[in-house]
Image (cartoon, each protein chain N blue to C red):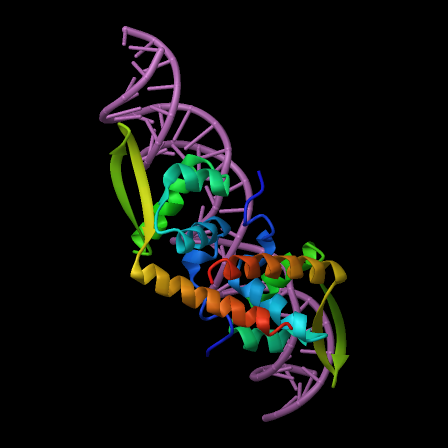
Length: 99
Length: 99
DNA sequence: TTTTTAACTTTGTATCTCAAAGTGCTTTTT
DNA sequence: AAAAAGCACTTTGAGATACAAAGTTAAAAA
């Protein structure tokens, strides 16, 4: 049976991961530290959420050295964009149904 | 620090509970069985989610007998309406930021 | 009296979430 | 050269969560 909540992705239910995706949707790439500050989470927590999203292939990572310091940047994959869009559309339809 | 995800309620993060609230927001009251079918969940699972929402005082329950059968109806409390609205507004602002 | 329906409650497993602490690598400071 | 600091993890461990399945209760129907 198809319900109103079927278009929701388990991976985006968590508030931190929702925040990560929302941030990555409007920024080509984002640095680890920027996300960490933006969402106000510990580095360990962010790392584990990022790993979960990477595992699902919703985000990708680019590691380099900038100014001789390690730099980790994340970006959304095409798959991630598609999935997140569907998730948001589902949320939107839930919201719209309220008005 | 205040982040974009601060207006989200832990109680509404779960897809089933989000569905329950969305359904209750547009129906004065809903019966246990209706909700169960609408969301396609087991009775035990629904009962525990309802209990969680009741505990938070976001929904109330009215038990009676209709046609000599036990009937359980749920409704949103004022508190629940307010909280859910804030949750949806936060989601909406996240969605809007994407466009 | 047995079965059925409604609405739970209990049980048990698996998963999730998070902070805190520990790690490895590199650069900066002393 | 040694120590400290920064970045980005990884590990650990505790507590919370989610779910199906099975068991329970109470009333009604067969």
